[in-house]
Length: 72
Image (cartoon, rainbow, N blue to C red; front, side, top):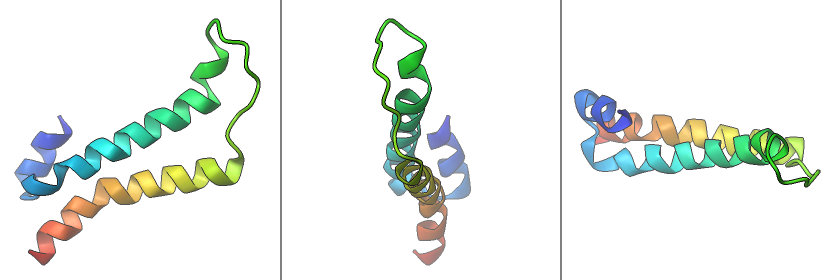
């Protein structure tokens, strides 16, 4: 779905950056939320600073293909 959005906006060759961003967001969700709702009994969340940096990096990676397509 994200690849279709990037293709419609003209940034077809950098859609892998969006995939990496989604993986980062899923990792943060797993470590901060989903890890504690299942059978695993670990109790360590990511530090707030690390979570914020990873989410910010993911948002930048989601928007980067749009900026790169404007430059090319």
